[in-house]
Amino acid sequence: MNTQDLCLGVLHLGDASGYEIKQTFERALSHFQSPSYGSIYPALRKLQSAGWVTQRIEDQDKRPAKKIYSLTHEGRSRFLQVLSQTEPQEICKSDFVLLAFFAHLLSTDQLAAIVQQHLNTIEMDLEKLQAIQGREDLPPGMRFSIDYGIEVKQARLKFVRKHLSRLLQEHQHYGDPA
Amino acid sequence: MNTQDLCLGVLHLGDASGYEIKQTFERALSHFQSPSYGSIYPALRKLQSAGWVTQRIEDQDKRPAKKIYSLTHEGRSRFLQVLSQTEPQEICKSDFVLLAFFAHLLSTDQLAAIVQQHLNTIEMDLEKLQAIQGREDLPPGMRFSIDYGIEVKQARLKFVRKHLSRLLQEHQHYGDPA
DNA sequence: AGCATCATATATCGATCCGATATAGCCGGC
DNA sequence: GCCGGCTATATCGGATCGATATATGATGCT
Image (cartoon, each protein chain N blue to C red):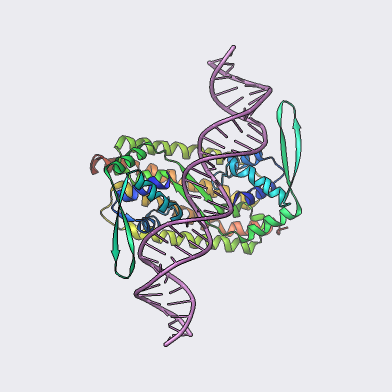
């Protein structure tokens, strides 16, 4: 799904500024979607000229003014329509797996450092997800999507931890990097 | 990692044409990287003008001629250098999780169809990975990267299957879509 | 006190990448 | 006999990322 429609989705949860939309992605949705400012701000402008959102400006004390966007009726039905036509596709880009794939070109120390860094990253992501897992009032689908993210990340952790020592051992004996 | 350097990586495994590079990604590496022709062909041209690859043309009977690329010494060391500076980052974009997140806006039938389609997709990806898992002669890192992909996909399958009926049940009782 | 860094909030811009499209001949199936 | 799929090239528009810019306040470190 493109950034425009993703923004419609977040606005479906409540009015928000571009900055707050980004925050929502970072905090709760980053394990499956995370568009940048460079696509969010132009998207909001296009949504406005398409009539799917309206803008109001909210001045703040000692802060830059917010431009808060709200869904229109058309925007709401547009999102429902897009959602019902969206295919459940998943795309992963992992430089970690890439590094593992070419590990024979690295030293064992480098490989060990990479794996360790990866473990740390997953652990941090996991904590972020577990922090929002506690909420009681979520629809079953939202709960499922968070639990899904946690489960998959835990599977990664478990697999890496289980095979780490064997990987490093075999790597050492396979031959030093050219 | 960008497409240029990814191509260097594949060429590190052996000479190949642009088409064959794409095939390699589709067959063995699609679970973590899968650049398109639209970035591969321009990348190969840039690699050539940078002196990191050389091109030779191989005519074929009743087929378009191949442009086969080979790594130069500079290309080889360039890849080693890039590899040792690459961070083990992972980025996922999942429209499946997105659909789950907004499932309260869909009917239970729609949700059931989406989950089923997702299961089918994972099963097919899994078969593709398991087909190359059998090879005996792979370096430990390559084996690890394939096993990692399989394990994570199996974790997805397991989780979805386990929670499917409960999700649909709760979804039904949560309220019909607006 | 002074300085750096982070958070809030906007926005743009170049580089990159995807997805669709075009071309073209062969092969296999219905 | 034709339609779709495979081999093989390539381009182009649009979408997206990542870095950068601007401005101010709060926080924290030395």
